[in-house]
Image (cartoon, rainbow, N blue to C red; front, side):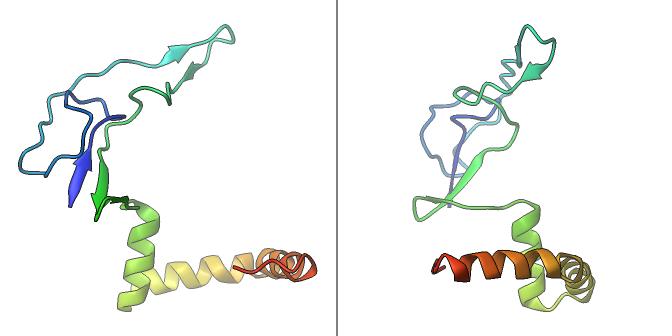
Length: 108
């Protein structure tokens, strides 16, 4: 497991580092202001307080989606209830997507 701080608001080498070896010295570079008055992330630079975790050299999802998938797979009753309610509400949308994929013969 390594962490990458290339796009995180921390000082660092920009290369993957083991969590015990990496530093967490803040280096906030701010947002980009545009003529419309809104602030935008500088996605080609630093834009987050979260370091990107790598497992076997691959970036991993460690946020809310990953928590839901793991919790559901482990049988957490609360998460199963949340995910079940979400899927019930999305049923018609999922059927529509499924039909569209079948019509276009898209394989997942």
